Image (cartoon, rainbow, N blue to C red; front, side, top):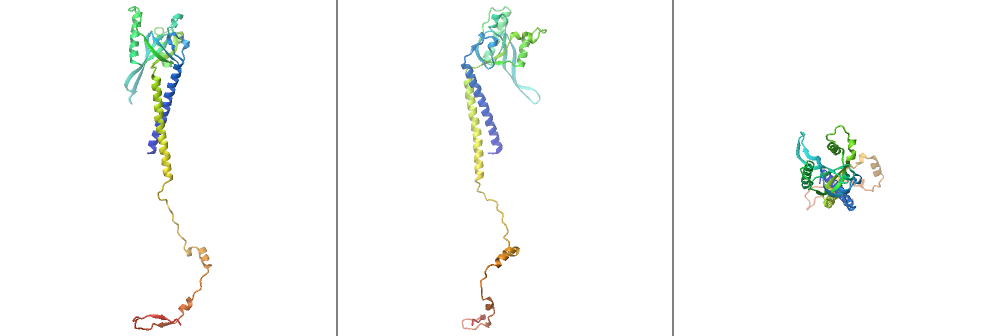
Length: 287
């Protein structure tokens, strides 16, 4: 396995672990929040809402759609492709505000196609009721929702809808009519699937990281026990004439006595001819 491939697998594993932990953590937080008990948003004042809260109830009135979220892919030339609307935002009056005589509005976000279709029907019924073409509202949508704070862009669209036709007023004049929260409809059982997905992602990421670490350690161990021939450098043995020290040491050694001089000083005599020897030779007198 190349180092580049190991690095890519390691990074993918780490990303999966982080994403999995995030999904699982969000799911567990959702379960804990729901376990506290969900209030009916039709019985809540503006001050009862807080970020991260889960609520439930029936949407009884939707006055209008004030914004939508569009998702798309932008090409290198700046053109939009694969565009789709993924969420719709609606104006909803808090039912408790009618008791105080001053209507207060919150935002509702719907993403489910069936709920969006029902929301359009509710808006049409509301328009007919205002135009006195109908005597009541007949459509409602039961939802479970997560509460979040409106960001600046959505808040701008929200105020623009409220202030339509009243250009002389400022946003501060309408603060008393605004509950600055969004109720986003969610699926009640989505937390379980999100938790399962988070666990699976974490396990896959851990397997990838563990495999890369195992292969890396194994390759290092194999490299440490390599039996391939090692590089060898040979040196010259010094000759006696090249090393005076060696010559001096050799001179100190005891030399055995021999009769070399006596051997070479013996007289040389012709080799006697015999019947078994027809050749000539050189003989040395041993006398």
